[in-house]
Length: 405
Image (cartoon, rainbow, N blue to C red; front, side):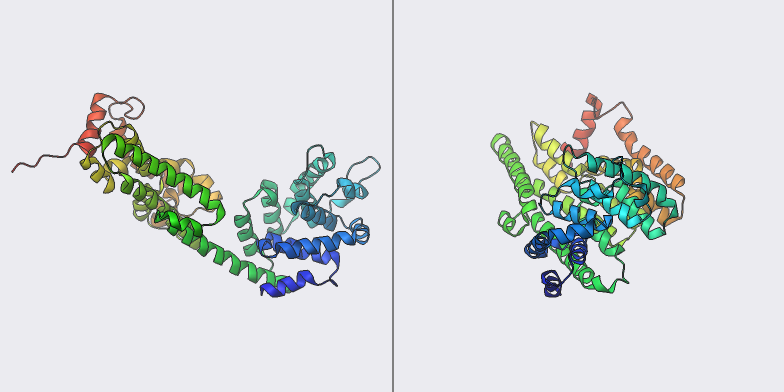
């Protein structure tokens, strides 16, 4: 399948504008990295026929903007003068151009590759933004979705893998000429996703030798985390004669596993029950990581009992971590829905009970209030701890109950 797409790119008989459309498809579907050298050669062929291409582009704004964007994205210098033929005698883009959605959308996307001082592209952005917003109510649903998404954030500024996923799912299945690219893109996306999952699992094992198998963008993060945690464990061993490396590794591994579980929920569009979500969510809130590190960094006398309690996921870790999770979910519930996040406290409660958004938020607010009461019953135990609040911490996490023989 990959070879077939490469043959299409290498076919010297393909018209330049058709080739540009193919390269754009491959770019948007997230598989350009597989054909980078072939795409570069194809673009070079287009540039060699520049006079023929320019003549056709002067007659077609959509193709002109698309060619401009692709060449710039792939590192070629292209002058904004190619847009001059689409302006009127006053130097403004002709209003007659604003009758076709694809034309406006292509110019809009191209305008976001402007360099400093390129007033033509600034004008193009203002012109297309205004026209596209006015056209929204007159479009079919699919076109309106594409335009709204572009106006929110152009493709050039979006995260490439998420953009590829969106384009694969939105791809016109009736376009038989490009079904090959779409099928390859879907297979590629799933393959890369499996690699990321494996990378995450490898990282959670804390094996420094496994870093060789990680992609480049993860290596720096892994080493930063690895070195920071090991330095902290070394200082603690040197100063307090306590080995804490296994506890630090465990909280980070648990956090990575929790993130992976939530990613699976989102990918499969699953909505767990509220209690199942909460049993998982307190770990993914990052509270355990923060509190564990805080204890080891600030305690002048780390004890074996405290280490054991931390390792067992003590209630003092779970309670504030649950507060973190619920408070975060409650404050961002509307934004979560907009991003397509289905596994959040509010949505889980709504799905399980059939309650409205308002009822779910009220329930979680009361739930949150019960948990927080312990922390704030006698003042703010976080920013203004008293002897009483400190004593509660010691009783829960540091001082064991003496068992009488």
